[in-house]
Image 1 (cartoon, rainbow, N blue to C red):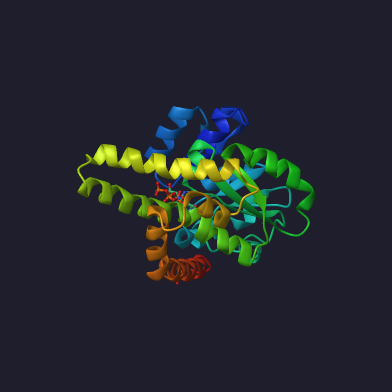
Image 2: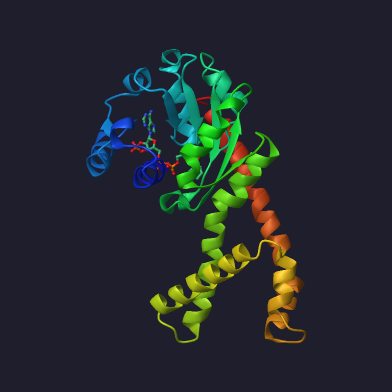
Length: 263
Ligand SMILES: NC(=O)c1ccc[n+]([C@@H]2O[C@H](COP(=O)([O-])OP(=O)(O)OC[C@H]3O[C@@H](n4cnc5c(N)ncnc54)[C@H](OP(=O)(O)O)[C@@H]3O)[C@@H](O)[C@H]2O)c1
């Protein structure tokens, strides 16, 4: 995630390599990324924090406590802490890093790499004046939206972050179906990608139309699309997806719990 965000910030000209420093548990990975991008590789987290103003936290939730516990006292009130970590609320961050009150929580997705992520941002109390700067810094990564640190950010984690994986799963079904009808895997994948891309761009070009209206426009009564749609509804695909979203949401809560302690 860090590599995707840093690469996009550099490519867009939003930040210069000499303005960005990073540390990483595995030295080799850090050196290789620093070599590719020109950012500073810093030997340890403590030194990184001492020399930074804005600190992005991007470890896995289960590594968060062990990462922050030894360095929490290095933070002070001038630091702005941007957490990318699933399941960890602003309240949890405040407890983990009590020396600074400037916490932001960001939910992005894998499309950060190409500047097409949904970027949900929740701000701790008092950080609101920084909103326009935050929006400016993150906008190369994708569409930045201000959300609350409750249901809204948790919803984005499932629908727009994990959602990329869910969409790939659906695309895989499309590809397999096309392959079964004689297309090579490469052709089937390409045709599937174009179908999803075309549908997304059509919707994006007509924001005044709801999805229900768009469906009515492409499905003539008793036609081929209408027959398929009727079956999708009979099979209750929406219900199946809702159950999957709820399962993902539960897992988010479990991971958040694992980030708060080393147990
Ligand atoms: N990937 C996504 O699309 C996505 C979407 C939404 C949210 N997120 C969140 O973003 C965070 C990162 O996810 P990811 O997919 O980028 O994970 P990742 O590829 O595993 O990256 C985590 C990095 O943290 C490093 N690390 C672990 N402990 C450390 C420590 N004590 N000090 C310094 N570095 C340490 C790891 O080093 P090693 O090289 O040693 O493993 C690894 O490079 C997660 O909290 C996840 O919930 C990710």
